[in-house]
Image (cartoon, rainbow, N blue to C red; front, side):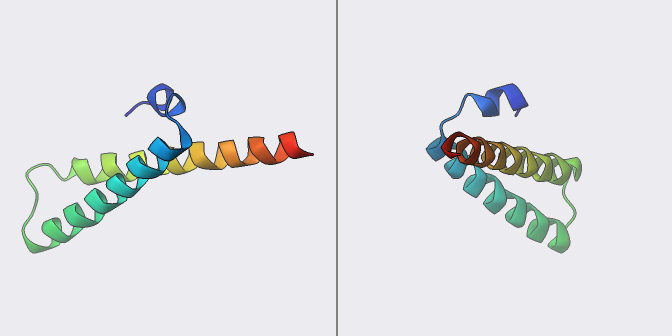
Length: 69
């Protein structure tokens, strides 16, 4: 998921995607602990997607706060 795609999402969509990505990350980590994944780089990609989503949410929160002042 690219940053440009994330910026186009609404706040509700961001929250849903974040929840889905976090759940998927936890599942992948548990599966990898039990038996190694075919491609462990998927964990890295999922972790980065979670970070991108959180960054965009925080940026919108800060923008909203600056507009109120």
